[in-house]
Image (cartoon, rainbow, N blue to C red; front, side, top):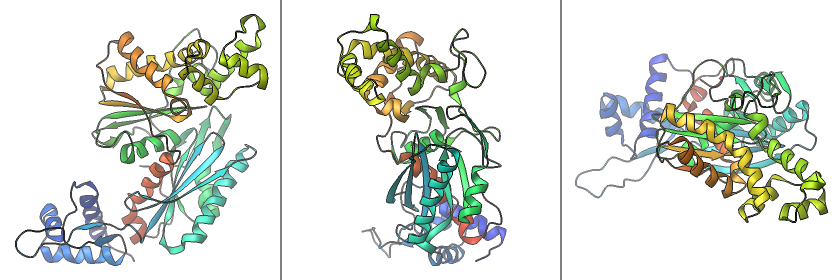
Length: 405
């Protein structure tokens, strides 16, 4: 269904008018907002309804005269795929054009290699393509680990996984036929929080995700901040201790080896393996029985008052306090949202950071809160990269793949 540039621009303006408005507009309201005649606006709306992008609802007005019917994005005609990688799992979400989940799917990766990482994702996409067929917009949004070049769709490096130069976008496009929009997984989660979680209604906030890797999404005036081709927000390689350990990136004292989930677990296991430090704490007793510990066990022990666990959590939280203190000073957001496995495994970590940032860095007392506990938040955020391009994907057949803009 090819259209010219003016039509494409007008279609996009109408969709944005509906997406960004606080109320569902009528045809007349859209005409007024965009400076179009009612006839012209109505013609464009009819085409968007025929393309199953918009739907017209029964009138909600009880006033005098003939009320205009409110317009909204389709809820049951067109769908988008979003995929989010977390530790050893792919989480895929099929959403409607309003971002509401239609179905969520979980695909664990049994053996973590580059090939299995890619093929599990592609298998999930193909399953969804077979099930939903022509209802799908021909693209997939992907929240991937690592530093992403959004113009080539390449994972430049994923330091926590030891990966470099993986052309993820090209491989997915070649094997599925779908265009790709790729961004770092924690930026995808930030988009999900902005639209469906703790960032709703907050124009200026920062999302920080902490797991085996780290990332952030900075929202200013409601927009995710971009700079160069490479994604903004790689906080894992901010140097927090010039005399600290070497990072796998080659520098000394990065936050990643000091504040990640791997750092916490390694510190705890090393301490408990030292017989001179072994005490009768909850974690010590669990370690004596199991000879290993999980992040969830450590966080639960800290929450339950285990002093050893609390000290261990504080050690990895302190570098994040330093980073957050500086971010608040520079950007002055209205809220900080902490996510990823570290923040969502227990309240103690987030509560400690909120108190220490205010006390040590004398920042304004802005809320520092735990992000959504829904593991599909990142997938929904990635899917939004597709839904926001619904006009282009419907009226143009891309001869190349779209990437994060």
